[in-house]
View 1 (cartoon, rainbow, N blue to C red):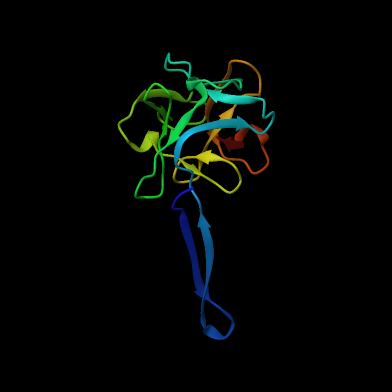
View 2 (cartoon, rainbow, N blue to C red):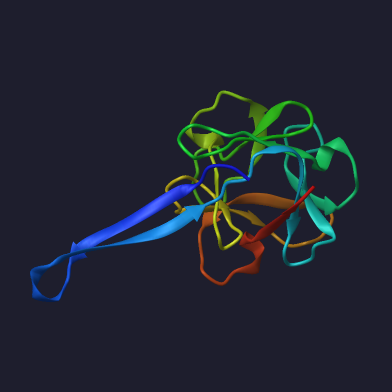
Length: 157
């Protein structure tokens, strides 16, 4: 795990006194050989088969399912697949398929991992989503929802 984000909330309390609350750092994963499991069924993982697509497949120990989380100075990360390409959110609109592309470190390739086990855009508005935990299911962008299990993932090495 690496450097995370610190959220500081400030305001005015009763009697006009300034108050602030500091929220703990959210550690961002970084390093090599991560598998990204769906929490709907941990036997299924995000898979990059090398053809530009990103799918859900049965977890197996191969490079298709091993990802590197970069450690960027701004607290975000890129997800680099076993072929050296980055996961890409495209235009970031709901329903856009997640694909892989040559790493350009642009906004569509930047992600954050939230305490809620969601992988999303840095603004926290678009979440990586798996249609379902079944073989060859699509992985796409969708608006973030509080209780949807298809938007949550666990990490392992």
